[in-house]
Every structure is written in structure tokens, then in C-alpha cells.
Length: 433
Image 1 (spheres, rainbow, N blue to C red):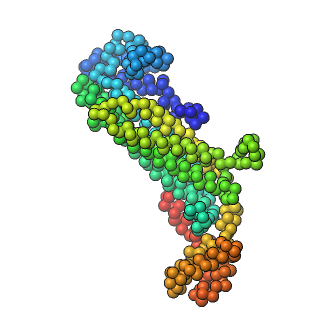
Image 2: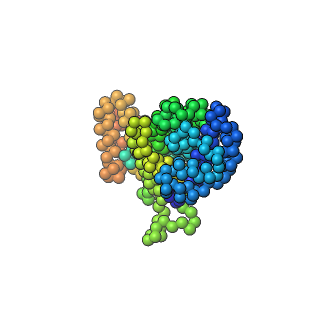
Image 3: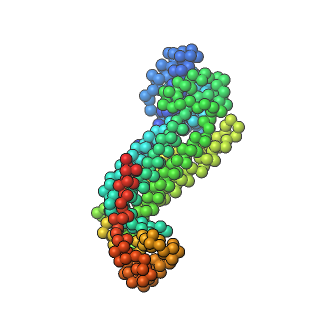
């Protein structure tokens, strides 16, 4: 985790102190269940909570023990025993390390999901506000980066809203899939611990039981989770890339907010660069990159190995922390985005009416001209605009083959911009309800 791209609330989830606190809660809840089953004394379960329930664990001490034991869970249990005393012998009864590690990891991913869902809600709110603001702001739509037909800037943002709404729904499902608990002992058979213990811990930690854990929670769950994060990152990059293109000097239809005192270049004082959207593009690449190792973690040997462990120690915090930061940054960028309707209108008319070519084409076919001839007539006049800087409407009105099929009035009415926005309200109703 790089501090530059981290926010405290998310990084706290992955701090050593938070991790050890979750480990303790798993062990202590298991002791409660074991006490109810009569496996350990009820007084011992109470003592475990009383002595360690509110303490700050000594992370440095645990690291010191692990340097000798070469085992993180044993190091923690050793430190815990120093705090609890003789009743510590009842901790970890019938359990194995994966019971603690996997359940904890899933708790952390659930907590991270909750923050990411809040981030998405904030982004959706910003997108909706700006979409409504620019619902009827005419701009040119582009395909292959080339002028296509008119749209509205509000529709661009409505598309992004719908995309991130899908992302939110996927994350809700991914959160549910990852929210499982495994307290099944060695190779997952419950030979030395009752399944009721797992059920109790799961309920206490806000999880569901893992149907078959084989000592570890199956990693297909995690592969799906990190894949969803990757898809969200891709949607971030899509919107960031749109802003980057719109801010280009030759386009300049929208622009990131440039604050007083901000500098764009160490060499060129005039520069106002799209640094936020470029940063988001890079962060999205990183989040996406974590999906592949998560998928490679699915294939463990037999009932378990630990080839996934080193991977998850990195991708768990890095993917969630980075995505949290990226969503926050994107939300701020959209909230403050500078939009230039006059420039949008100017760019739309840059090629003097070419954006209406399809309407003329369709009108000719409806007037009885074959599609092939209609296309030929429209294209030959359009090429004069490209190559000779002619006016498309004027060229059509001077083309005798065109005017033989369409009256001047019929041709002129095909250049009405409002034609292209007549269904904007219907689309907005689909997106926003």
C-alpha cells in the first residue's frame, strides 16, 4: 500500500492491529461455542474475553516471536497466552491456522466491500447530479474518435451512471459470495471440532458457513471478488479516458478543475493537464492486475497448500485500498468537472452539417432512391466538406440528383438538432427511474 494512494479508513482494515483483533475474535467466539458444548469450561471462555477483549496487541512482540517460530498464527497464540494466562490452553481447540486466516481474510474483504459500496454510492450521486444538469446539453457523439451524430453530455454521464450501477450490483453479490466462515479443522473434516462451533463463529462475525472448506475456503470465491474489482476499475478507466479526450486542446469540451496555485508543468507555465484522469487510468491498471493472481490461486494442491498466501497478503490490501482511492478521486473529479457547452456546439458544427448525413440518406431511401444510390449521393457531397471545406447543406441543395428526390424544405428539416434529442427523457427514465 502506497500512502499517496491510500485513505485511512480502508488501510486500517488491513493494519496488523486490526488483523490480530479479528484473529482474537474468531478464537474467542470459538471458545464460547466450545464452552456451550461442554468441551472447555465456561469460566475459561469468559476469562479469555475479559483479559484480551480490549487490549492492544503488541505487534512488535508478535513479530519477534514469529522470527523464531516462522509461523504467524503460532506467534499470535503465544503472545495471546502471555496475556490470558493458564486458560489460554483452551484457545484454538481442534482448530487449524487456516480456520483463523481464511475467516479473517473474508471478514476484511467484507469490511472493504462495505467501504467500496459507500464509494460507489457517492460516485453514483455525483454522476446523477451532473447528468441531470447536462441532460439537454448538445454535444457531438464520436465513433473511432471521429464525429458521428449529436448526443447530449447528460447522456454520456447517464451511460456512466448505468455502468457503475451495474458495478455496484456485482459488488453486492461478490461481497455475499466472499462472506463465508471456515472453522472445520485439519483437512476440513470437523474431526476435532464440532460444526456447531463454525456456525456460532459465522453468526458472530456476520458470515455464513462454508459448505465444504477442505481446510481452506475455496479460492474461486476470491477469484470472483477480485475480478469484480477489476471490472469496476475498467469502468473507472473508461470514464477517465473520456475526460482525457474531452480535455485535449483541440477538443476542450470538458476539463478537470484547475485550482488556484496549481501548476501543470515544470517547464511550460501555460499547461493545464488532465492529471486526475491520467492517474485514474494508471490506478485502474493496477487493480485489474490483481484479478489474474486471484484466479491462479484457485488451483491449490489437494486439500490445501499456501501458494495463495503470499499473493493474498499483497492483493487483498492493495486492490481494495487502490480502488477505494480511485473511486474517491473519480467522484471529486466529476463533481468539479468544468463543462463547456459553447465549445461543444462549436465542435459539433466544425464540419458544417456533416453530422446530419444519416438523416439525408434515410430521407432519400424513403423518397424512392435505392440505398446504394442514396449513399453515393450523400457521400459525394460529404467528401466536399472534408476535402474542400464546403457547407454540407449548400452542397446538397445544389445537387440536382438530390433535389430531384427531396424538396429544399425536406432537406433543410433534416438539419434540425432537436431530432437527435427527442428520446433523451425516455433514456433518462430508463436509467434513473
